[in-house]
Length: 146
Image 1 (tube, rainbow, N blue to C red):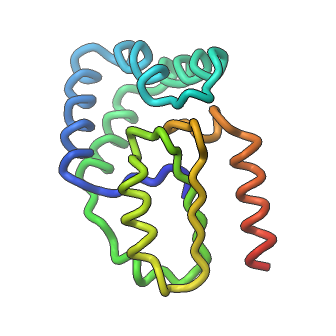
Image 2: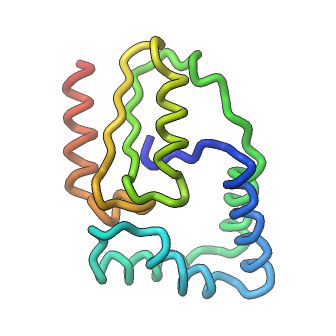
């Protein structure tokens, strides 16, 4: 799980505001704010520019749909997960705050092989901000569970 969002009322409020903005103005306001607001201090200017382009290329209806799914989600029964799980959490992630990842991880405890790694200086765009570290963490976990 890379930057998983723990369902909560506070996350739902943020996403509802995003929905309203995108419905009225399209993706440009998201592209103008998210690259700086949702990345950590390790993100390069190139990474932020790439994130901006990814956002501008999003279909507004698809983005809104994804926001609605997350806003309306309820926490599942994490304790019933019966497969190995790796959570990669960004230390500076505001979209999937570390506290939510920790809560999720705690609820998984005792259910099998679980591991959480916190990526220092990383926000919500883990695979863009720290692609090498993400790849290493996934590969390392894969070898641990084999």
